[in-house]
Length: 194
Image (cartoon, rainbow, N blue to C red; front, side, top):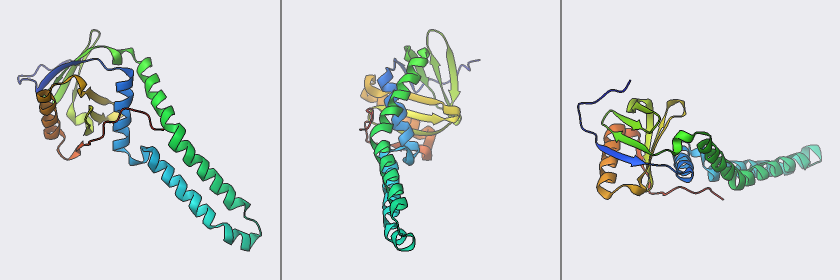
């Protein structure tokens, strides 16, 4: 059941997300909330593992008479680093595109009303309301306002169609709502790595 508020909405807008916008917003939010989700961080961790493995080669040669085991681990870590940097980001991007295609409601034109304590969303088939307390963090970039919620919930607004005053109102509302869990990033995001 929808709660009809007595207060006016901070912002009311209509948006229709494309598959590319959805994938880009999810990617930006995921990488901001988990530094280890960034391809460069994963590749660096694997490169460190390769370096440590290579550094044990002289010890292995002296103690066991062979360097194959450390070199094998070094090659394995290096291969995983290349995969994490070049191939995994594209696979994650394609996964988000499949997720968008599998959920037709994501692509419908949606009316969004943002209030101080919650937001209302409505499309031609459904309407729902979520309180901001269900969301743990908010990230704003030059293109998106995205919030991460429990159970995989995401709140995503693409700012491409908003005016400057609407963007400012939305930014201020998110800053007031999320306080210390609000982050502003200058990155545009929106393209797969690699």
